[in-house]
Image (cartoon, rainbow, N blue to C red; front, side, top):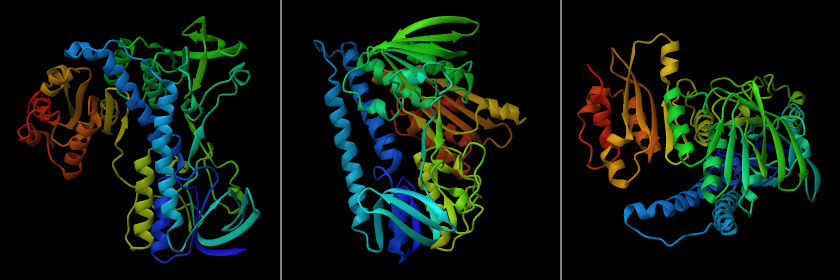
Length: 462
């Protein structure tokens, strides 16, 4: 049994930087990764999907360029080239991260499948050297999540369904892609493949897509997607699937009280993600999970076992790369710099990278109403934003929920080009306690998207 100061299981956006920093701080550190270095973000999430979203936007702009006075005599989508472009960027990120780790003094990188065998002891099944055993006083679990597969749907296991991982490997554009799930992942892929040339049908169980967002935000995104000929069924669920031959799938879908059959070529499962904890043997070290398998942690990200921490998606809560990275910074600064940081009241900004994108931070209008707050709502269509008019894309809207008495900003939703960047301006205002009446008269550069924050807050009466 080999002893380390720290062991990190999983090389995601918390585990990888934490391993390097601990090693540089003088702790003999081991990081174990069972698949690809860099975790979901680099390999199956942000890096590959946003690269492909960028390709899809180019296709969309090529189809719209005649409206701007630039004539293109047709274009074609080369899915193999799109995949190669994505793979080149992905591999550069993955290999760069791995090389940096391997060159770090005091840090050992091991590929294999880790599981606990006792209190703060793990066994790693490696491809070449068999089982190796390790022990450490500090252990950090950063194993992330995996797609949920609803095996209770009749016939699903009998078709060649896609996940958010396997869909990235397609080299041909699907003829008709059906997506189960009308949330962030499903909508990004839906619009992407519609722009590549697929017919797209989205099946969502809730009354609206993006069920956690305000109804007006959901309605705006729905309108944008439908303008691109994407079919959306809400209050709907897949009842059964039948596949006679490859590329010919019949789905029976219940829409409200009605039932209809939809023929498609591919099915993408995007109904959520589950924590990767089922093979960790957490019971051997006494770490508790909730009923869904997420590791339970306190506000300092420590589990019920002293010295064992869980970071990123595996602990539940907001499943975003930037939250995972912030988890790392909290743990590192507390352990090495002896600070007293916690996850309490930290902001949770996020973006959905449809085009236009959705940028969100703070509470929704529905949440403000449910909490009984004294609030006001400011909205501004992007059709009233000068920069949007000039660039030829007025889809979307700006929305802010504010405290009627203190005039502080409580929540923001921006649907529009550069929506995440505009949202970030207001997030900084929220962080600094800057009130909406001050932003109303702030001098922004003209013509920028953020300049229209003046007009957004001029819609409010003091």
